[in-house]
Length: 313
Image (cartoon, rainbow, N blue to C red; front, side):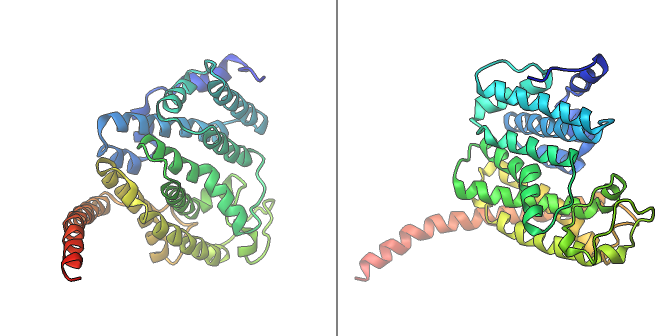
């Protein structure tokens, strides 16, 4: 059993204890969307986001792979303790305990996420699309599934569509962060999609042209997953659907900006401007209103059609 190391290392787990501040600092898009959720659900969503962010920061802010690995082991042990009916040791794990017990989140989901984070510590280039999809599932698809449990959804079809939506958003992240990841000596674009296996030891960063075909394939795959994920909106409670619509749509627009730039992923970090976010919010609000109206008409039409069919026999 791993215990916390030095005092300054223990501090890593103690510093980030305000979920509202964490989501506002690290994801303006999710922060905006989460404001549309009912307060009780919004609080839990922000706690889940914050725990996932701690896991991510455990790797990205570590001074060495051994420190990152130890942090993740400590977090994993706490998850195991929770499911064994014991009290977690970290203050940062207590939020996760509340969510697990309140919403019956399955054991494998948070453990899969930590497994994905550990693959970042001992990074190995992704060989092909299957490797890419496994990684995206672990670091994002499982988050989509855990969100379903927070919403009271346990339908397997709905969980898979949430997984696909999470994977799509992670693929968009990868496309946006090619330059930043390369500086960390990582590249999440599958080697089989690149022109050659460019060595991480190279002192010269490759050009946009080197990445263009792979990024195009990545965003095409992301779009396929977005379209599958969108079909899961029908499973969502009415008081959560608009928030998810907006979060997914804002992320998708990052990919559209990259495409519009002819896949210039090294020159700048693409983001969605405030004016575009407002337009997305308005568009998704109209789409949600239309969805609800169609569903109401369908509910009235169904008994009418059944009655008509009976009378015509």
